Amino acid sequence: MSQQQSAAPAPTPTTHSAVATVARRRDWWRDAVIYQVYPRSFADSNGDGMGDLEGIRSRLPYLRDLGVDAVWLSPFYASPQADAGYDVADYRAVDPMFGTLLDADALIRDAHALGLRIIVDLVPNHSSDQHEWFKRALAEGPGSPLRERYHFRPGKGENGELPPNDWESIFGGPAWTRVTEPDGTPGEWYLHLFAPEQPDFNWEHPAVGDEFRSILRFWLDMGVDGFRIDVAHGMVKAEGLPDLGSHDEMRLLGNDVTPFFDQDGVHDIYRQWRLILDEYSGERIFVAEAWTPTVERTANYVRPDELHQAFNFQYLATHWDAAELRAVVDRTLDSMRPVGAPATWVLSNHDVTRHATRFANPAGLGTQIREAGDRELGLRRARAATLLMLALPGSAYVYQGEELGLPDVVDLPDEVRQDPAYFRGAGQDGFRDGCRVPIPWTRDGSSHGFGDGGSWLPQPEGWGELSVEAQTGVPGSTLEMYRSALAVRREQADLGAGDAVEWLSAPEGVLAFRRGDFVCVANTTGAPVTVPAYGRVLITSGEVDETGGEAVVAADTTVWWTTA
Image (tube, rainbow, N blue to C red; front, side, top):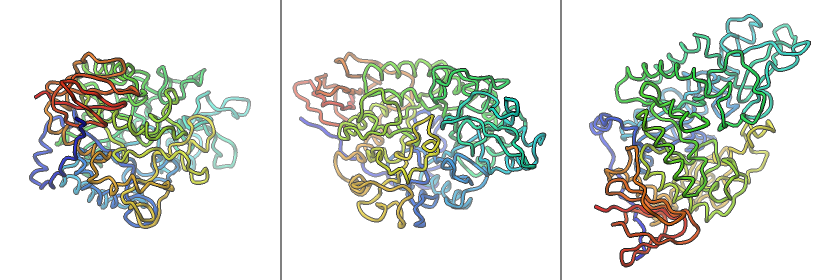
């Protein structure tokens, strides 16, 4: 017969005494499902069209009922917003567009009362050009001690008119900007691997390390449960800032270590940070955004005395193909096992095209795609990919709205775009705005429940039919599939933490593996396949017909069974 898992019942609210029990669960992060909130686009409490901390706080019960363990918040610090808050002017202040420190405190407390942990972003590779250090460095001119905390250099050429080296910005164009000195003359150049408004810190200067150790303590004392480290593979630059010679490696996910990314010196920084984190109770964690050439290099970041997790971007960049997926799963588990770290799986985030749209397009187009593709196919594959990811050993991250099956908004008018890479021409394509459109909560309203005053990026027609309201309680909806899958994941002892899978024989284009009494089968082909009926179906992303000990699994469908 055809089977589809029904929605799991919503969990009951936890009490403060129950939270203490949650906090005592050791190694919670090894199998945690962590939900990324992009504050601009989650919920707007004051009707200004921009999401904020109070809006997030009001929606915490939704996240508890979804079944996640922790919430990661993208930056909400004081910032001119040249790169959506990843240009930080004050690391100890909340930007007024998002609220106040009191709002942050209330959010953390409410999350803990609901049994949720809070992870905040940390941006240590660069600051805003409006950071007090940088403003003073400019005002004081050449020779200022503040300039030593960044990378200021004289230019090349007869009059210093050429950049100090050939590095290019990830956002396109030169990675150097020349300043006008206080006397009005053209002067030194400063390094910015991202936007010109994001000058890179010089981590060779002791004041930089001192400052960030203090920032860590500030937020740990506020009660946060961990930090996601932005550009964790950056920070340390090769001595002398040598020319690159080739610009093929300017992509975040290159093929080799570069003079500015994945330098071995970053690991000394993380060992110092880990000592601080381990002083605090409650098992606080670090997760690295480390774009490295290989998963083996990624494993360096999660050695026992460094960070706890590192996003698996090699997995994110893998197309919906059984052989490719199996290869990256094996490499990941083999790389993490020697350092004793969990694999950390992710399919979407605020920097890449949503996987419902990536999988709607042909393979080989990368992680930033402008084409909508076949949306029905993309959603079907996205649902199946989610169940596959949640069945793998380790931790998993969910980007806001993917539980609604949201596609990327690929047809935003040019005049509303805000991605800084879009305006710099070269480098990345600059279409990250498409995954940042505010999510829909209700069918109707000026912003489908996001807020009372519209939304900072326009929501497309039909957005309301993908909303939380439209999908709640609807059997087979993507939202109910996520809720059910996360409930089953909690209930099944063989899901979550671990470091291995037992691969089973399967037809070409199909992944099948066992973990104790649990079996997962993922059909990545465009046609139904027949496999053994392994037991009782726990959940499936599509149709499964069982007859006489066999199961016909529909195209692009993942099934979970229990043999118990």
